[in-house]
Image (cartoon, rainbow, N blue to C red; front, side):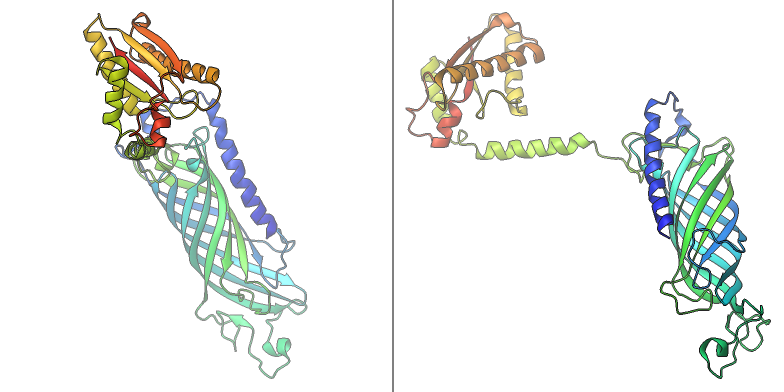
Length: 428
């Protein structure tokens, strides 16, 4: 049992790893290979398989591969794909069953009907689609019912066992399910149990009409009576491993949905996927709104404007404010401000820009002078490289801590720090 679960995990990881090999693939995708809601695809298929059924019950031991009789059973299933990565299927399995451990064994047959969900692993990877246009790997999980008949027999005599042999009682009923307890050769209604399938498989695309595959599914019974013994520590289960052939219903010249590649911008359910930058932009807009609403210079803007008029002897002064440090990315509001100034300069070739850089008085004066120069150069670089303004029309004046706006008593302490970390853009 542990080996089965470990094998499933290793299989899943190998599926994903194999999918990454497509990064170097030279295959060119044609429109019919790319999944899109604007196109039609075949989505139904019917499959038939044949393989061994290994019973794991109280009377069959718990080795991965039994060393006695192995029963083979056929299966049929119908599959409907909803999107390339997910599908549902209705599956039917029929098989004899056998197990022998110690003095007793059991023999019978079962019919298994289940509804399963299928998740194609490689369709969920970072490069969703078939491996080399030929392979799909999938997990399967579902729920169903097992209808079975079973008789317990004595391994020495081969006769059907009676309850008196097992429990030292006067009850001479035969230990059977689906047979008459007084006549073990006469069939009655089958016993029924819930079953939970779980497993993995792979499929190979032969053509637009046919696939071949191999799958191994462990079916967990909800009870402990398939072998007619109720004393086990765990419920009975059986492993069905089958080779199968699938016929894809629909037009022969049309691709089946499970062999398409998910288009960029779609999630594994086939829904349009939001661009990951959208959330970042939305968050940035919220941060800007919060910053603009709370920064202290907003309420002091009239005071700042009037003070700058006194400093530069004109009103045509625009300022970009900086947090502490040398440089930051310009906000959309800053870019818009510089864009408007650039339009004004493009419309009048005689206008020039002077960039006056300032810093607060925290730290060394020489270092602050360099910081103010870095801020001016960052603004100039934006004008030159992003807005295509002639660098000869831009003058940089780094002033560091010189001429702080500290005499403005109406500003809040936090506002004083911020307004002294700025670049004044003076249009001359």
